[in-house]
Amino acid sequence: MIKSHRTLPSANRAPHFGALATLPLLAAALLWALAPQARAAEPAPPAPVAASAVAYRDVPDVISAEGVVEAVRQSTLAAQIPGQIVELKVKVGDSVKAGQVLVRIDPRAAEQVVSGSQSQLAEAQAGLTNALRSYERSKQLFAQKFISKAGLDQAELDYKAAQARVGALQANAGQASTAKTFTTITAPYAGVVAATPIEVGDMATQGRPLVTVFDPASMRVIATLSQSSLRDVKLEMPVQVEVPAAKRRLTAKQVTLVPLVDSRTHTAKLRLELDNAAGLLPGQFARAYFTTGVARKLVIPAGAVLRRSEVTAVYVLGTGGQLQLRQIRVGEASVDAYVEVLAGLREGERIALDSVKAGLLSGSITGK
Picture 1 (cartoon, rainbow, N blue to C red):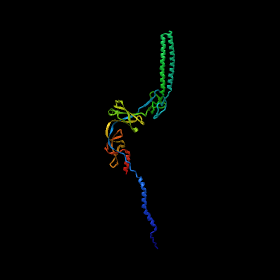
Picture 2 (cartoon, rainbow, N blue to C red):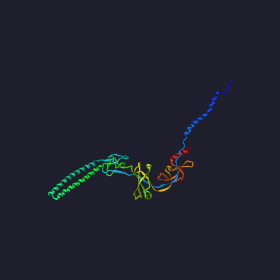
Picture 3 (cartoon, rainbow, N blue to C red):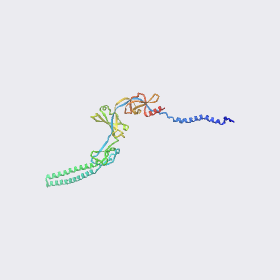
Picture 4 (tube, helix red, strand yellow):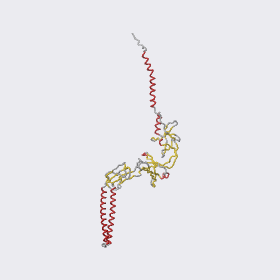
């Protein structure tokens, strides 16, 4: 007997169809709940970048000259007497005060010279006392006519010779005492130790350099100019000094032309006294900018220029406010933080003042 398996409608299928019907509603509710978080996760629109119009300006026309930083006060302390170095109290880079002991030379030889000179002086003073008494006796004897005039003259001569000998030996004793002080080398002023070309145990000879000290609070730049350029320079105008190693630009507080021209190079030297020169070191390369006049040039702020390897460019604002990178050719930088534009820009075009920020904004815009 064959049984039939026909499926009959069941009452429990109705809830199943109801659950399927509610799925779209649940998905819509979930999307609505996540919408604020998605909106919050969206990146904020980029902040506007400051821009400026390219324009012609009256900028100082300058001549650059290379120079070297040097200390106004720099001293090389040398030995004035021979002797062995017994003490070296400083090293390169140490800060020292005025009068501070730097080096000591063995003082025993100098002390013996002082002792010998003082003994000779004491002997001469005793001889002077004896010569004075003899002279006084001779005067009395001559008054009593017991000795001749020649005897009196000889006593007077002996007395004056004894006086001269005492004076000479006093000078020698003073010289020996002064030489003894040369065994101690002290700092002539407050400064920094630049060099110590000696070690303990070395033999100091007269004139041998021992310590070099300079005053970092007072610095200047020695710049060199050709005779033809010197003719056009206006020394009464402010002179800008750039020290690339220290990333500093200063204004010289005083300019002094050295009244001597090198006959071989036909150049003259100028001393540029610097104010607030902390951080500069003697021997650093410097570049000085001397004003020769005023010229009208197409310039842009130096901060707007982007330099990458051999590319020099700026970000130009287009008509729709979009940033476009454009390669340009620039000239020398002026003393007031502007750069001359030789090619690539026209007057009136607007450029971004901050090239780094403009590059970041340009990248985010292009990425979209």
